[in-house]
Image (cartoon, rainbow, N blue to C red; front, top):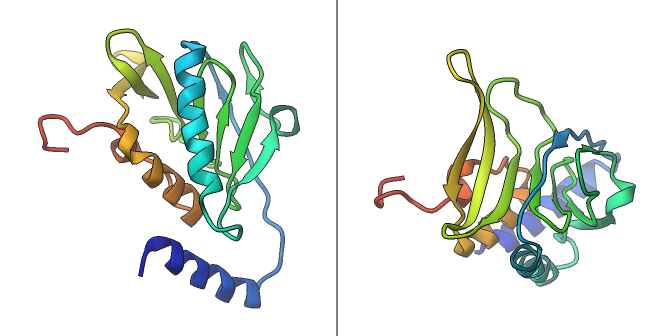
Length: 170
């Protein structure tokens, strides 16, 4: 049984016992990137979302309907999960937003295009020695399905989930 069938079964059981709406919270971000490359990756993410059964598809919301404090360009589109997690596109980057804040290591990710490295995943990390910095790894394009699976099933997307493995170890 694939993860899609398991999730459909789980949701039908949950719908039978609970029909209350869920709330969502969101945070902030910063932006930059190459629009054509990021737009192509966003199109692949949307196509993968559209390939899911209707019961599992992430809700598509316009950028102005979602309340995020964003520096720079406004988001054009959001794919929002029932638990409040979302993935958004602003033309310069793709933002994964987890609804629960973490002051030390951000649970939110940016996917951007960097010349020479290709797609990279970035996360903010705070340290008492170096201050606030960015942790950056190469994005694995083969893990788009895993990204959507985490959103649909309510799991938090971790940097290791969508990054390329280093030396085959991680």
